[in-house]
Image 1 (spheres, rainbow over the protein chains, first blue to last red):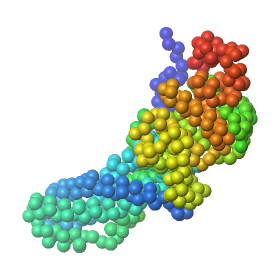
Image 2 (image 1 turned 180 degrees about the vertical axis):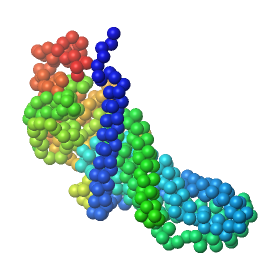
Image 3 (image 1 turned 120 degrees about the vertical axis):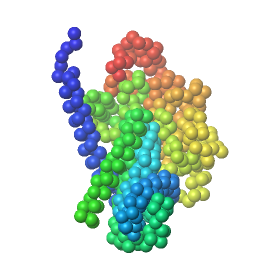
Image 4 (image 1 turned 60 degrees about the vertical axis):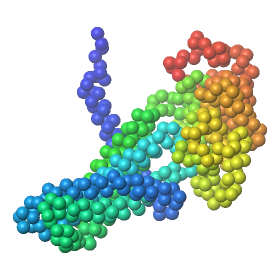
Length: 267
Length: 239
């Protein structure tokens, strides 16, 4: 018969698992804060590798554009198709453009772009850096006395900050145009009525806040992806875990940022 | 230009993986750290080059340290030339020291030294294991280090490639006069490269001597290691 010990009980195992998860949660937050500080300090000291930054900008902006445009465009079309018919029937056709534009600029555009970039770019950054970690490439960089934060983090984080706003602008434009086309097809609303309403519904504040969000989201997604990759442990499994962690943490972080922005600017 | 290690201790959690070891390597000398897998050999190298922190003891090194990793650890997004010149282009104190033309010349020289040429634009994935290893040698010596650490340099290579790599280790010692440490458990590498040897078991030094001393099999440890016997003081499961 197997000997009964406290360590063999399910309660103890669950408790251990909980402690491990909690430790991991706290150490990840600590890592994000420490590396954010180091990245900002290196950027302020202009420790920049422009060749690498340009390469990362191309990856962040150009590679993510098709999927970002598709997601933002389609979500805007879906909203327009659902609301346009009903609003025109109720005599509120002049407000369709305003509603779609506000939704895209304030929320949908940035959140959908964020999700697209996390799944497309964030996961790829995390898995790339995690692979470099488990194959000792980062150790080699350190032994060669090259700062891995300057070489790996700074170009990726800076490309997030620089490229997320233009991606958002293009995605929002596509979203609004898509909304206009969908409204016209779904309810016969004229393009002129739709776009006049868009101009009435958009304020400078909305656009400025959206651009600020884009900068913060770009920084957050790139930083979290770098940190999760950099702190990966083990082999192939470690790479997979780091990638999943980067995606989950980035999703949660941008939703939390979004909530904070809403409270600060629109509450 | 030497390495001096005194009473070095390293623990992972509660387990002591390096237990009070001491040794010295002079300029132009090769020390082989040998032992079965899990005996703490690679940990010693990581401690010397500062990749992990020690828990006790002293490590004194003079000059630049370079390391050749077990699986080459070439940066796979960079081609051979960019890998070799990585430190020259990215290291803070070297970044502005060389022009592009000088860097290209240095890359060609280092590649020639390890018997490769015309592979500058290839990526690591396009090279064989032996060639990757030689590129990692070239990368390691690009800053003309005073200390070179080799982690299992011939592991996983065919016998002819192993001989080639062993010859390069000796040649680099002669050309650079660097103090070198080779971590290995391959007899051919030990015999062909080492000036002196320490054997580790469970993080402790259990033998110190020359390759000839090792082959005499005067102690139970050397006898078990050389004959690759399961019987002896070293138990694999404990390692």
